[in-house]
Length: 150
Image (cartoon, rainbow, N blue to C red; front, side):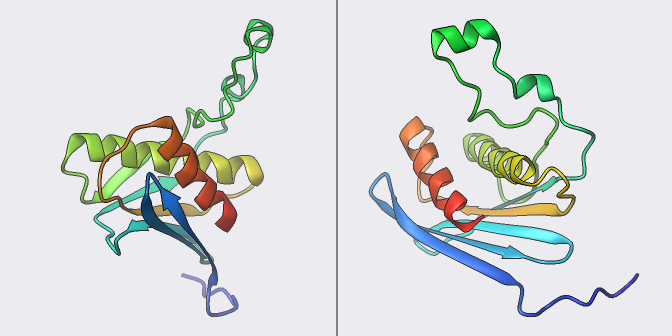
């Protein structure tokens, strides 16, 4: 294994805000071989997932709007890329929490892959939500906090 000369400490970004009335903190750390994103409410981190960004080439057909979608005002901008798969590493024993966690992980991975298509590091996501909230507003508020760090 080769040792890479990288600056230390790892580049870190943080953001905080309210999601569904709950104080939420987001932190990203960029390592030479991994990108770590944590989303925490009340200081908890109970569910960990990873998403390999070096997967096969993305299915770009999912990224493009069809003409009928554009006419109807529909957008696929918030849909995660179909070639990215989140795997639970720790936690996630409650199926609805696991599903929400994997949605967040693949959405974050999609955002990173869209921003930098050459990115090949492993994404590690730590999630600690006080309650499961599958509402669009909570999802968008959380993703917005993450985007401030990426």
